[in-house]
Image 1 (cartoon, rainbow, N blue to C red):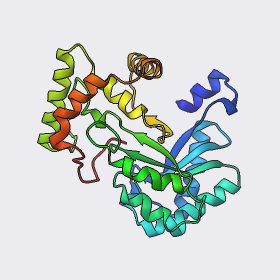
Image 2 (image 1 turned 135 degrees about the horizontal axis):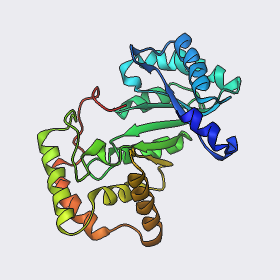
Image 3 (image 1 turned 90 degrees about the vertical axis):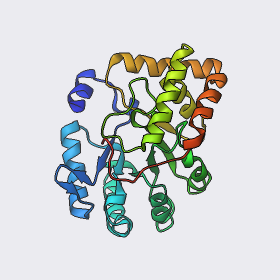
Length: 253
């Protein structure tokens, strides 16, 4: 669908950035050199493109990190040399996977990491890793600023792996915002967008309305800054469960 849309839009290729993933498939995980190499060609065919800007090894904690270091990334480097990829990335939930891989790779082998659910009002543990990533020259994409639905008026989906205590605290924070005529998602988006050491904030959007709301949140942040009063109140409600995470294994791809 994206390939068809990009083709129909007729926008010059150098005016947009396309990122895709490898390693996680319908039938499970496969980080072998053969499979990820084939994966790139499959993605390019579907996207109707000659190259992708970013290719990410996805959810690497479900594979062997040594295989990622010794086999997967070297295979992607060959595709980079062939012009099919501009930048190589790795993604996952546990923050320690990033230091494990980056400490074992030569400088420049990994260009970007994608971390999720670790830079939002309820969990800011990614912040401790930012100086390290900067020292390695690695770009940072922080995903799930709304904590996979925790920081929304509607609340998280049923499958969300957070503890009952964390869900309850987020629900209370959302209700408090609503009482004051505020939207917790907007406050959460602006919180995540405020850190200049994070290159990109990735958030899911399933309607035009959500796109417009997120653009408004970003625009108002640039013009007026954060709603510090509302943020302080939310942080106080979430303080007892601050930085509480969950086991890797359940998330929405």
